Length: 144
Figure 1: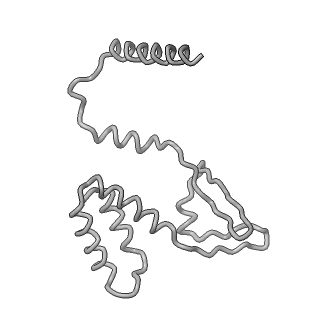
Figure 2: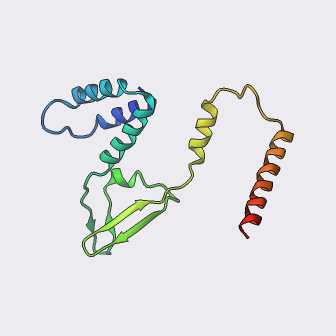
């Protein structure tokens, strides 16, 4: 099972179990199902499960100062600099995290890769950039 799927399964263990079997038995079943899937499909399932788990309904209270009292476990997920869009309708206020580029994730992915057996030279990279720029310029000129 992919490390991401396993991490999700472990994180889910602390969630209250629905009526029925104990959480560990349900997690074990989930792990078996996930292991039977190709890894690319596991990643898609993990994304859907994360979205499902995170879409729990939480009640917050507006205090006397007009500010939301956010539960500590939710507040712990908010990091300085994160941005959210706020959608307000007659019956709802929805906060949605603005997608951003995660440099730390990129660094971790890059470090986990094996070394490139045929790295490009700086000269090859420069030539590739020049070629792309020529193509873009020709494309713009043909559209005028």
